Amino acid sequence: MTMKKHLVLCTLGAAVLTACGGSDKSPLLTLDGKQPIVVAHRGASGYLPEETMEAYVKAIELGADVIEPDLISTKDGVLIARHDPNLAYSTDVASHPEFASRKKTVQVDGETQTGWFASDFTLAEIKTLGGISTDAERPQQYNGLYKIVTFQEIIDAAKKYSVNGRVVAVYPETKNPTYHRELGLPIEDKLIAMVKAAGWNSKDAPIYVQSFEPGSLKYMKAQGLNTRLIQLIDADDVDLATGKLTYAAPYDRPYDWFKAGDKRLFSDMVTTAGLAEIKTYADGIGPWKPYIMSVKGQLDANGKVKDINGDGKVNYADASSLPPTTLIADAHKAGLMVHAYTFRNESRRIPADFKGDPKAEYKAFYRLGLDGVFSDFADTAIQARTEYLREMGR
Image (cartoon, rainbow, N blue to C red; front, side):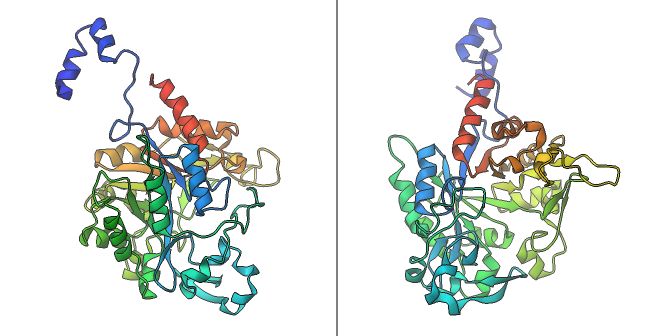
């Protein structure tokens, strides 16, 4: 039956409506009309050190639809899952005296960083390191216990746990692709080869490929990558006094735009023209969530944001959500799915109007038609989705 015929039949009367299942269901506002996906951001990173096999397996056990690795390269050209080329941020490399001499200061996407960099380590050396929590409020007792994994190991895990009708998808990001290319360690061709070897080179395969750099996505598309491609959209911060997003390097524009002298900002991507341009090479966008619903604090007599909860800090917990933008609807009109990042449970990250309840925040975004969420706590995202679907009669 065609959709048009189905709709005609379902308007004939209450009895037919019930038979069609339309009396108690409200349509979902996602691009495809299906429930939003839950992407485990760096695995179950709210509970275990991020981007370790243990974090990915935990996320799968929690029910995540998708697991997300950031891909960087080792010295010997192996793609591994780390958010930053600088291993000091998320591993125990500083406690390994055998690597002390490799500490150095370099530029990553124009930002000066001091630490130990993956491009100076072979995979065998990196496998001696342990992952650590990157958030002091999260469990620290697992630091150093779990090893860094390769992209191939993640692909293998997704396939292993795709059983009994369940499909676990993966959502790799080409991290700092210009930086890696300039090191002579480009990411894209290796990713394409691994996707093809996995049998996943199609739009309906259980994979999404994302990047902040348009050039990386365009290159992969031109080289025959046929998966769903997602353009990430960043900003530096939110000015809690105004609710406006702020732009400062290196989070103001894609680094390949900066290198090419392109003066546009990430904000240009969310315009009608920007979305139309993205549609020429990608299937969706991954915006930082304030692009969809920003936050704003209350000002005191001096124009400073008030510490509403009196904890001595000013953050999201002292601000309230602003009315949503039209970004989701605009992207859908352009034929683009929208997956927003990053949803977290810590109270300092939950706007005051949600009263410390992360599920309330998820549901506010789900109601807008968001197609997917990147979450550090996949179980919370799924619980909120279940409650939202119940609201919608599903």
